[in-house]
Image (tube, rainbow, N blue to C red; front, side):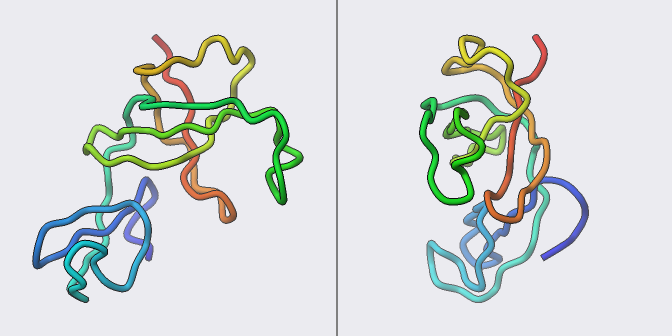
Length: 114
């Protein structure tokens, strides 16, 4: 699904449910009447953890921050935060911005400047 560059999701034409993950049908009502949408690329950290020992394709990234982000569209997703030099700068409620989508990971975010 490509409608433009940015944080993409889907929206159900029947029930209005929105989700970031790609799907062939609505995860809420099962309708196949879904459409691609662009979502807001900002949000805040809902919760997070620092992963010190990754596995699989994430092993070489360790240590890294794995976070649940609540977007400004009020959607939650699990993501990796990039471009961190100090893990102490990460906290719940901190503002983040979408950076890019990785083929193996999905959407990746970074901290916003204060």
